[in-house]
Amino acid sequence: MTTDLWQELNTTALLGTDRRPLPAGPDHLPVDRSDPATALLDLAAVATVRRRAGALADPAVPVPAPAAPDPRPEPSPAAAHRLAVLLTGHGPHGGGHGTANLGELLPQWLTAARGHGYRAPAAAVPALLDAARARSELRPDVVALTGPLGRWLAERNQEWKYVGRTVTEELAPEPDERLWQEGLFAERVSLISRLRRSDPAAALTLLGSTWATERAEDRLLFLDALHEGLSLGDEAFLEAALTDRSKNVRATAAELLSTLPGSALATRMAERARAAVRATAHTTNSTTDRLVVRPPVECDAGMQRDGIAPKSPTGRGQRAWWFGEIVAAAPLRLWTADTGLTPDQLLRLPVTEEEADDWREDLHEAWARAAVRQRDADWARALLGPPPRPAGALARLADRARTKSGRSSGATGTAGATRAAQATGVPSRLLGVLPEEERAAWTAAFIETHGLGEAFQLLGACATPWTPPLSTAVVAALERAAASGSYPWSHSGVLGMTERALSPATAPAVAALAAAATPNSAWADTLTRLAETLRFRAAMLDELAADRGAGA
Image (cartoon, rainbow, N blue to C red; front, side):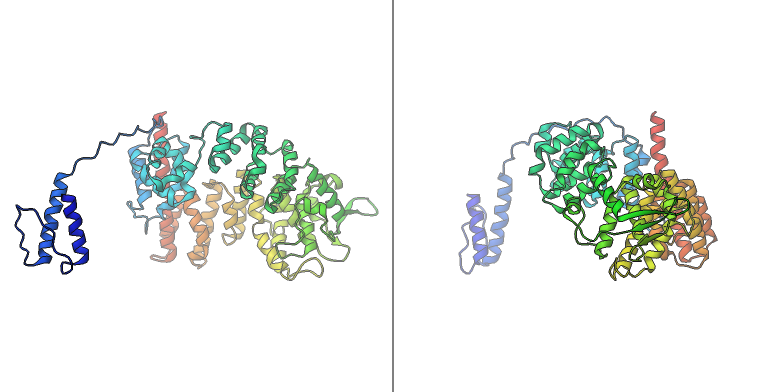
């Protein structure tokens, strides 16, 4: 009866009391019906109370099984509190005037905590899952740190469904055929990556079993995973991929084969490179005195099968494009073996062309790409030159690229701009081939001579936190920049990097620079902020390290 009355009241309210009479109410409750609208509300109030009073409780919901236990320790209360500060951005300094954006320091806390073997504080797990939902770069660390509890919560909240698609080493399932056949794409990529570290041949066999049915974009990502443990044992698979229906897959397979100096593709490229670059000897002493370039005049079917596009996608001339692709894919040992010269000696040779064009920069740029692709530290050192020698091969590459507007037959009018853009990334890519300490030392020497103006990409290639010598060089360069009268925002990219990568031990030196700067100036504020950020990072890392030291 209560339900029927409620439905009648709803209908009357929708139609209006002037079109539909009031329903009969409870007999024991007198309702003044002289004002139909007021009477309707009175009846609705009575019906509402009666419905609530007469409602029966729903059956009890079964309590779900708890999350699996996580044996890892939680960090100390101090470290947990700092995590809460990083997640909310509200701390002693507010994350505003006093320190950098605290959210930018969160990845460092997560990485350090994961490295020390902690699990996330239970109270912080929901906030961490929310943070990683908005910032995908945090997901591997967050999923690993939140562990079984994070996965348990994610099963009950659709907003955190990404957790089920994120596979980490700590929570990776055991590799099996069913996981490969039925797993999520992220799980399958992770499976291939992990197998490549332990059993590359097994990973290749697994990939080959479904290769023909994979989507083109998935085949491309699976090929990227083959960088791990790449060897001549992968050659047959990659040679077959050279005929793939996807252009990007073909190009990636060719690049992988070119990193294997003993592969058939590398041998084919070496033959083409010998035809394109010929060493000439001095008539009196028979020593190589120059390199003569004869770039290809067409992109034949064999070149196309080996990953060379017939049309230049960069705006460079066709012959320059074909020439660069051939030399970049040829084994670097070809040049030293054929000439008996070291990379340094080869880079100093004049380069001429039978049609009197200048191909020196094309050749050196292609050698640089080959050094990065083949991870050849000797060639990378030679191309970079001894820092900070302005006349080194690297400087010649960059300077000529900035000023060269084109050539008569080897490039189009837009070649200068294109080559300048390519040369910009040359130093950082070559640095990435060198060991970390040598990388940092080279960058420090460059900064000591040239300052911070062109050092952004070089610093980005260095491992963080920066070594003490590199950090010292950066602080000294900041001091020179502040004294020169320039504005901090002209170095905004490097300054943002220093907040995350500069060694925290330099905080006193940065604070001294801030104190010496003109009060209330832009540099004083910037350096004060940097010093506070470095102190914050130092305390953050010390808390996590001290906890593990005490636990040990």
